[in-house]
Length: 366
Image: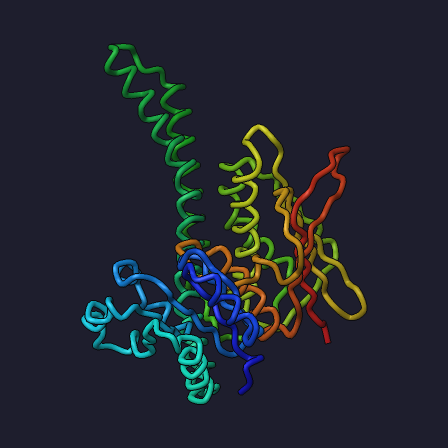
């Protein structure tokens, strides 16, 4: 293990110390524990906390400790308070702020490097990703189920309320009104039932089962799963799937990739574009040099600067949309032996110039 394999995230106010660290290590200055990037290109991610004990007490170290190595810089006057926080593995690496501060930091980092167990680290990371994967997946599914239920339930409620109002006002109920309302209610009850069956079928899919499947059939399921989110958020969904392709892999994982991309685009469009403006989400299938190329575009006006931008960084925050894209890329890479890339895109649709994100999924067919 070398120093080049280590990235240090420093949170504190000591500008002189951060300058020294940058001379010998790859180091970045951060300003909030809620926005610490996990740098995939480095084997060891270290957070260097240079904060008062009172501030440290406000931080939940449970999840941070699982992902990062943590080093604390403590003033001598605060040591007794810090000592009372100890008693578990989170607070092992404590350095007193003395005249030998930088030397002691270097020794502590060297110890972390020498004790690094790559195999164990990979196992822990996989375990954490699996946990957050389930959280992200459940969150996305609940979001879609909520949208599926809200619209038909509001229509059913409106019909029943209209009939109830006529009764309360002493008006005579017309048979045609009752028949119209009851037919509409039955129609939407059946829709709800079918929608719930779609989600139950999806959730019951075996994540470990591998088989051949038609891409267009998966896109049909995908279209049903996002239909009410599109309707409620005024998103126009368009797909070009004239070509028939078969893939070998897990259908549930493939659907998860599409849903992760859609959920990120939907959030970005809702944030950047008003309801009065047009929102678009496109999926196009192509056959290029023995590969299936799926191009997904939106009109979110989301701007980023490189393929390794924040979109594919793994953040430990309450917002899981970044994690969804990270996992989507890992699925395409590890389960379908392909690649998921992104770029900013500007294109024309029906005489309108649209700007947003273009996701490209490239999967070998051989």
